[in-house]
Image (cartoon, rainbow, N blue to C red; front, top):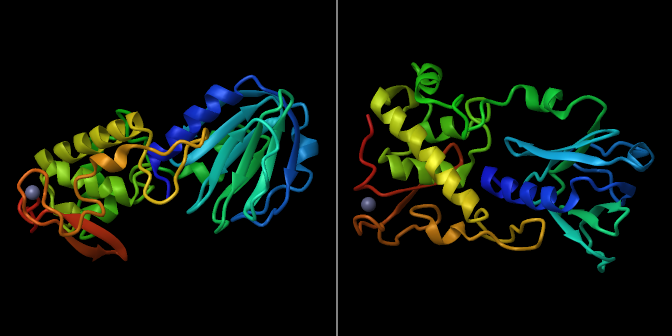
Length: 274
Ligand SMILES: [Zn+2]
């Protein structure tokens, strides 16, 4: 599932290729995504110019002269910008065709993703209104996080992955940030000291920045809008590294399940757990 760095990699690609471009038409081959695609979307967006492409959490927001589009990749969604008509795959559900010949193709085998049109600014849409702060802004900070964590027995890893707490951190980057902070993933969120929360918030920002720089993490088939894989998988410390030696201390990385999600940690480097 794409997390913030992967979505940001897609956004950057779309932004460089499609800003200022005008939509000629939209072909919807399968409207049954997580939320049904608006009927007559093509009519509604014909002639619309893309003004700006932004991101909020894992949502990509395409601001246009004729309303906004909200794109979510779900579990397996993928967008690719191609020049001419490529052979269609079985999961190529939507083509947005631009006047300059570029095509934004949306594919999604599991169809948990979505493309939503809204007449209002995308940021105001109900899907986005309850999302927590962007992790790379000052609104995500230790003070606020500790306030939210107070009294919580929930594992700190699940806490980080809760989009109401902070936007866009999923399984990969929660695991990695906890390793960098030296905190065991099942530590109750409310047990972290001020100092630990500060280190953890800093670690989240650090790992996300590095992953964005590397173009995200490609595990199975993530690609950015240009079809390139992300390079961050080579920098992972714990995620998917079960039984491999810790890059810091050589102890074998362990795996456990927290809230039904695979969790990875170094028993030596992440020993804090109350
Ligand atoms: Zn270690």
